Image (cartoon, rainbow, N blue to C red):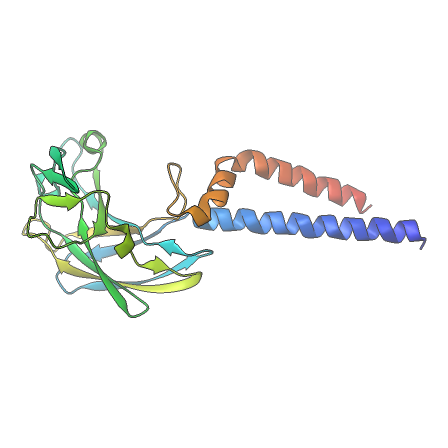
Length: 226
């Protein structure tokens, strides 16, 4: 084998290493765009355990998905009317108080249901989605801090995290209800949870194009091997 042939072989190996690295980055992007959903019964003291994988540290975001009839409102989940005050919002109809406790690596945090979601969407569909925010004691069930106390969110570390989600409090209408608990993905079409995911979020915005380019790159390398 001539020196030129060795150089070409080495160049192709380097290009394959780059291709594999790009594929791995895309896999991380897809993993980071997928949330984790489990059923949860809203009974005080009930809990579920969830294993969550994160390629990078990520502050916890979660929501509950309630079933409902299309065209029917659920006022116990809160309403849209609110006024802005210093440090937050006061809701006209805050709905029932639903609180969860999240335990991660021996540290516990309380989250409360944030009233009001996309009410126009809810009226046309059979689901109601409510975000949960870190709970801050203020002795006012209609008052909710805004922006949320994000410094109180537990941070999911790189790798696997084992979360225990327990029901701390429910109202009379939501008690006993089976809901879906959704641990939000670090990347979604509208935002990313933290700046460490910005580059992956930017990549995933263009993933159909980047996947096509990656496939073409792989085909080019395969032809060079022959």
